[in-house]
Length: 213
Image 1: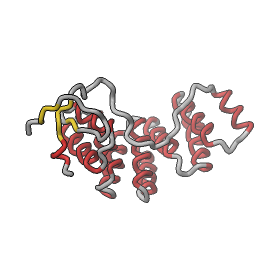
Image 2: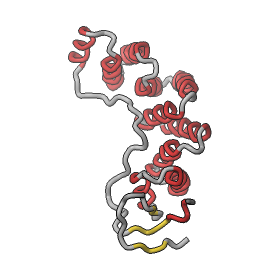
Image 3: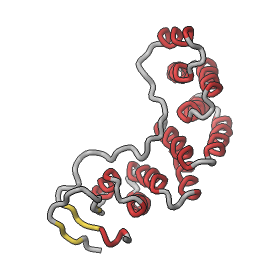
């Protein structure tokens, strides 16, 4: 059924909760462990990519660039597809002012991720989490170009625009995502916040008022 046929104003739909993250992209989140704790973990098991990643992030925050780069590279040596470490390494180059190297590595990682829409979305999400919007948007656009009928790809870029308050683009991609997969309450919620509310299958609805077009 075309999306236009299921547009409604749904009673009490707007809510105050932000939409859920687009897709489960994985990606590591830094912990509160100290340098000593992480080094102790590596002393027990050196081939621990998560510990190397967290240690790299710790050194990056203190601008110890050489140690940060070393541990990012070791993490990627043990887990080449670790998107959080890839994005972290690019961000480290940017933070230390080496924009040319940051671009070189970002281009390489985006190219590697292009074999899979899911890989592109995970990499884009890790770029976005670190505030590298240009690389995140470029990766999301590449994912949508490669798979225009992917609900996840349209959702990801749609929520990116939604969080940037770009209503026109957010509506375009989120409506397309919902059309492809209407069982997405978070997408319905984001659309509702922009005045375009859709009925999620299986979710009870209140009094309806047909949306003016």
